[in-house]
Image (cartoon, rainbow, N blue to C red; front, side):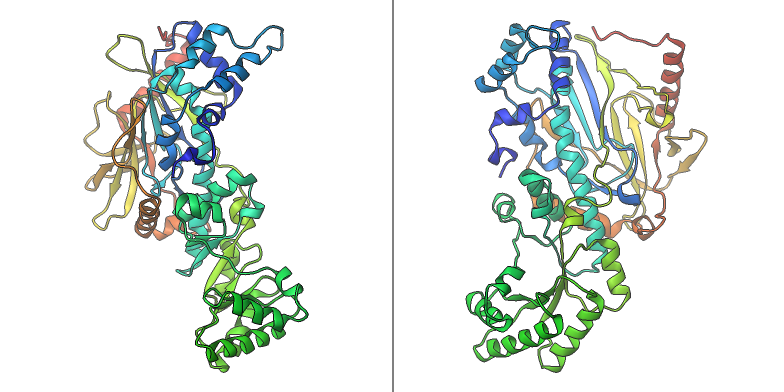
Length: 496
């Protein structure tokens, strides 16, 4: 299903910051609405102190572009907005312009589920500058959070060592839309299922759930509660054993498991949601094995993250699955990816060539990369990525395969002898979906394959190995020259 299954197309267009609309009005009034522009989405630091990020949200970009319209209700609202200094914020001519407005952009992106690194373009947007500007906020809203969630999930799944991880984060997520985004992105990142039934319906994600403590508390005894649940859900019976006392809960679960066996059914698992999870899971495994019930699995929850799960396995906890909620849905301890959307080139009406542009800053790490950017990913004979090179087709490429570090131009990486491929693929052409729509399963598979081939040193949690990302030497020189011209005051160009 599409991005707009829960919203009207109007809501997509108005899912923006006000300044996007005020700038759009300025471009329209200045006669620059049709000036061509190129913008790039990127982030500056890997999330969670890790060595990589998982690209996510790209699978919904085509939906965003195709459904970006302003209906009468939206235009009426915009026309009613007052300007702080008096009068209307938006002129009637601009409101009329938006009435038949459609995005005529072309979009390239890293395929959803692939691995991305700081400062390289995850998404490239080309089109009329007013179109590019109007879609900025909605695009960042899609890509920033889902990339963060997919990355967090990939880390949790890595720590789970092949055991299933279920997204239990809906009740702690940032609202219903946040809950849907978490379910979708966590599935791409490697989660096996979600507790979110609406996400299951919309995206086709497997749903999973058991019962709460309130179920046990509603019955005269824990044993009666377990028996009633086994009768009600014999094919989906996972018993929560820590409402009162875990040791007693395990014994009651064993009793019910034996009763289920007598009826030709099987207890699937128990879940422990509190206490010393390593100690209690060892006790549970011992008790079930001694009772002749080795097939009963042990699932745990309770504020889990990658470090907790890693610690549990280090303690020898015999765990089979994990329900990860709050720290996954809130991306603890990092609430934001920090992805940005920056202009890198313009082309005046009627011009044949792009003019690269650069943003400078008092903080050097915020200096942008100019041009129409592509990414070449270099891999070794086993398909392991060894470095990414940002290139611009307007600059002749250096045949030595030297990558120039983005932060320190005196530092280079040699990738000669390695195979390379273009990482960005086209998703949208002139406002319409381009190529075959990727499924969520394809994105999930791509993530699994990409992580499998990524160097373990880059994936480790503590002090991960730095992955080389930089510019082709000609692009590095262009960037340096533009920065020098801008500082000298001689490099300003005009859009018209």
